[in-house]
Image (cartoon, rainbow, N blue to C red):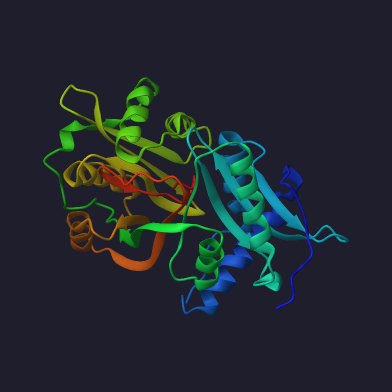
Length: 313
């Protein structure tokens, strides 16, 4: 397959309309071609500017676009997010006319170069396990799968879910005064932290985010969960907790935010209490994803749920 020549540069505000068109076309084309049976992104392409809106605030200047050398037309784009201990490789999209022509590889290599040149211990991502071209791209670049997630969609009744948790009383809305405790908890569970992300979800300057915490009986926190409710994506995460019962209490709290709507949750396949509870809530499986790491990785000492906006690894 011929490699497409391209120029890599940072994304700008002027790229956003073309980015929305490309992102929608790229994802919808791939999923239709692989039996999805419907559009992946069913919103107006302009709504996909939410990825830019969020990333330009939490990680300004960290999106590479690939453009045609002569016309300047957008060929691909990938966000990346430097945090305290690692870099996350965010949503990747390539214009369908350039599928399998090396555009994604050039973007990934540039982000690997950034990660290594700035001394980060790891580059992390959550990628589709169904897309073998994508998997091969990352695997050849040195990413190692660490956790497998099943993507479950829950349609929350307008009256709310019947499921409840005995830990409900310990769940409350997060506040900025919780940030230090959230940071400490994620370091314990995942070996990383991302203070800017917690603050962003709690402050919610884009108007579509929410965050909850679970108190540890007066001794700090035992869990954190955020969610995004936007025309481009309804999803719970990032979220982490010491135990499954604690994660379940947070999950049910965030699910209640989506009454009358459908919401996506990525659940670790070995967390059967969460999986079986969501089945009882009527959840259906729609895809699987792999949490992958290039570099240092500490196995999770608890339960960790990823999100696709902001992208988490």
